[in-house]
Length: 55
Image (tube, one colour):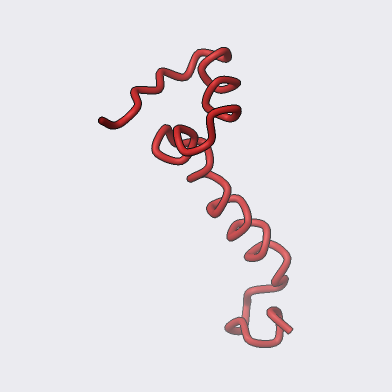
């Protein structure tokens, strides 16, 4: 369905779908998202991401 709506010359809607999924998930790596879930924030902090909790 996605491919049918793309302009001519764009061969495959799967490329667009993968890009959209990846862009969506990038925000989950941000400190603003991670600090909302304690377990996630702790795991990310343990891997070296500096998380400063908003006051």
